[in-house]
Image (cartoon, rainbow, N blue to C red; front, side, top):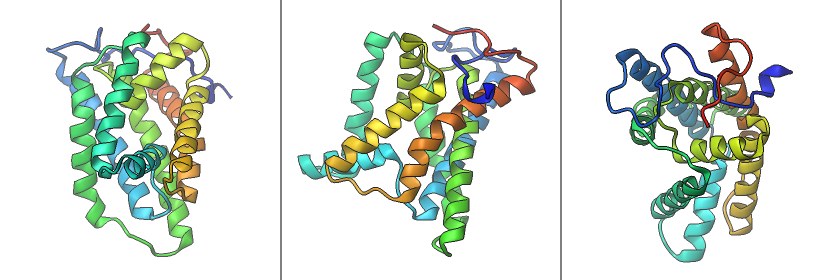
Length: 225
């Protein structure tokens, strides 16, 4: 299906012409913030499900265990290392790179207290699947805004440009590799972790496709290499 074979981030009428844009249009910022809010809401659902953390948190757990540091510190260190990979991939940061962390974290803090927690396996499954879908849709919207990706999404789009593979395949490859390394280092894996690792690539591809379709963009849109 074409929805899972998107090979680049499409450009919409409200997209920024460049990620490093210090004076973006209000509409572009609105789309960016809305996408990041959906992303954060999805992350909160995954946390509330109690079915396992995301692959990158599994990696942070493993790194923290082997280096004797906190998970927060390990998460920060991993993020810095991922950002360093942007250099050879020629990825460009922007306002969205900063707002990515702020808005997603704030959304999690805001909505998590109101989400149902540990009320049975069925609810866990619903929260995990809904969470992955929201993260994918939110990613599609904020990436099309083109104001700079977060560290992991930037790695994804950079590797996609280099390999030419569909975004879904690239993202699944990244997440499976990360969770495997994290698990070998001692990180804790749950069924939600596996669902996220295998489902986030298709979810992001679907988010890009649906956002492009809603804006009347045919095909994959213009590449932003």
